[in-house]
Length: 343
Image 1 (cartoon, helix red, strand yellow):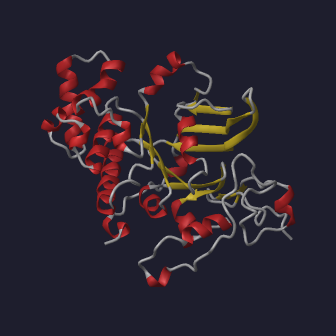
Image 2 (cartoon, one colour):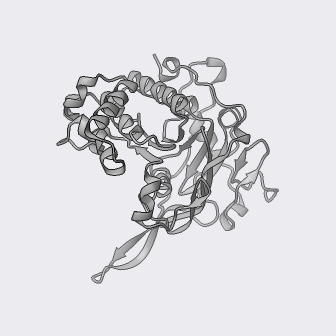
Image 3 (tube, one colour):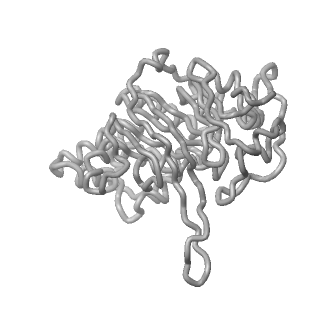
């Protein structure tokens, strides 16, 4: 049975456009220096994120997809301020947090959490489950020992674990159970915003469906906002309200999920969707094979970053980088095919 068949369709908000913006990233750049020579001088930069702007509304799940190396995980870490942006601003509930010190960020940390891809790597194997979940409460609150224990048990039961599991250690659990523990820890401080960095990619398909449905249930119960990062488009389809497609550190297309999946406009989005297995024979897409290799973020092509692999590239794509064009109904695409320059 496929993941699509196992997932229950989660309802999405029909009033998404009217929701208040919770997180906004404006013109974010994140460049990593390349050192060379005996003196280790900076000889170039890896442009992991290159002028990206996104806004995430309260209560929604904003999906972020793209190939490995596209910059989606880096963008998530910059938004959370685990990485300092090279340029740009990050607004959380209207307040700029991009230049705050670690001490000043402490109050915001309670409202912004992350669930990592590999739960075994993100959980300290020398700490019990109870210690792992209670640690944020110990650092950020004045809760007593009994209050922390009570909260830990409550969270474990919320994610489908037993109260007795708090005495065990991460190595005693399966991958899916460890991810449930990671989710419980992320919920410990009652956050408003959680970044989910490929949280199910390391799990079996049957377990993926369980964890995704759990996350959807928790979102409804606690009024959570998710930034859901993934490379699997079938996963993003079932959990997201809106989807952004990244390529080489830039946003190629962003739209409500129905528009992205039913009417993809960018050639890269079309190629990605053509690779998704379809169980419905009447809706199967023609497979699009991209030529060439994924360009290096340290030496991106001039103009449009996708032009070296795009079957529809033309002269303008070589000299000018396309900006996002508003196609209506919240659908934006960065491609010269739609900005009036392609004749």
